[in-house]
Length: 298
Image (cartoon, rainbow, N blue to C red; front, side, top):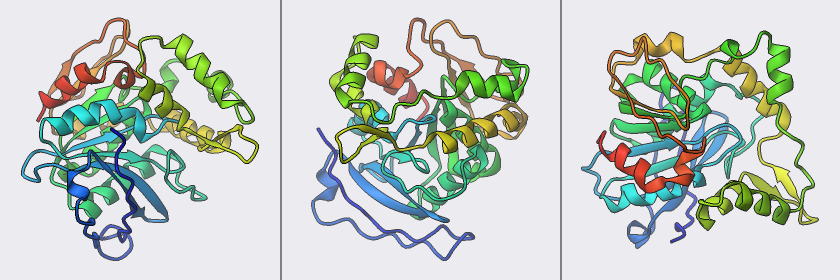
């Protein structure tokens, strides 16, 4: 079921700009599978997909990866919501339906934006899951804003240290610069995704395409332009997550996909649960299984 779309203007978080004022949803919104909200985080209005549920249950905060968007979490979010938990999936700056400010494309700012979202929503400490770069982001959230997090789930990310894989930033940038896809026909990308991920459900294919706009000529346009993508990539080079591990005081579940190995050294309470044979986007590939693992942390 498609979430109900709702834009809610919320002031910036306390300590950044003004106080937090959350507008009440219209009557009937609570019965919807989800709702979309606009959250002002410093100099950007962030988009959040919300699945309301019993406010007394542990909330979940879901964070996408680089050049992705919140809709990739829809399958997981639906299962968490069906289990009675409030769920919030955030579009980070210039991702999904969020604004594109001039600056702030780095891991630390993304973590601060999540803190602002939690404050604006008056969110109780949550089970926070981050996929890929989102895992690096939520490590910083837990380390620098510990009151926001009850436990962490790192989904094929949260341990990405690019300096371990490349001899220089120039080599890293050359290898990981994303392809120029602006101007591509949407159906071409859709067919590529169908052939590359035959076990994905149609909603996951549609969610991946949501990382692009459709321009006036019916062609794809990146929501996160390549220059901003590269700024985030550079922050991943300069600011890896491992130095923050000793400051993470909550339980952490690390979920590597495929045949990857992960070293949780430095985390005080860590469990590794591999997904052999899984895609990097395993939240799109096997949402029900991943949701069960997230629920185990609630």
